[in-house]
Length: 254
Image (cartoon, rainbow, N blue to C red; front, side):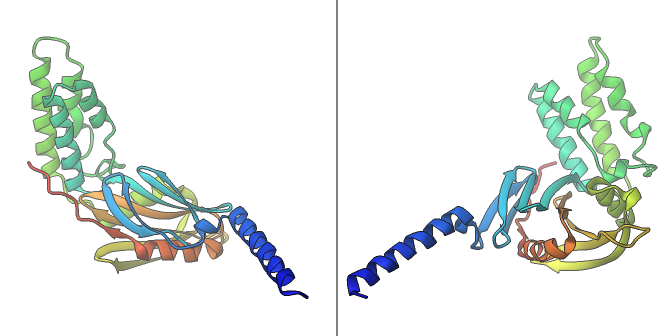
């Protein structure tokens, strides 16, 4: 075959391979190091090879076909996080943004308020509930006093136990009534302490799922397999988890 024909053949083949690569999404095949804000957490991570990344703020999604792994800010984990949220709401109120402050308080969730958690029952919220429904001239002063009561009460709450935190994370991430813990392991990854848990169906001992969580600045960060068999998602889950580096939170003025 003449040299010019060889060159034409190679050029045509190269264009074909380029077209196939673009149609298959080759730009996503390489690892990509990202810096993302996951709710309260500033995180650096590496996307699993060949997986699509979707940034939804408080939740980062990683997909490959029908398989999905998520990285989620699950909100308050400890007394520290509760105090941060309450002080931020108080700052909004002091700035005259009463509606925003009230909405921020109503959004507060955490393991210290789950079930029969000690100290986190109706008595904790009573001063706040009494204040926000007042319409008289003393309503503003009552709201200020209610914020003080909440912050002082939060500082006195007992520390959240590891058992309660585990129940809270699993219940918030999956249906705990239909899952049983198969194994759990405490791990140190890039300076952060993680709890790595695998669950399965309690009757058949099939359909395993995996999730891991850590605490940073009083808030929870959770990695979980949302969809797909663990046999297929496990390697990407592990690669994502071991790549995560969390920037220390900024100190908050009291």
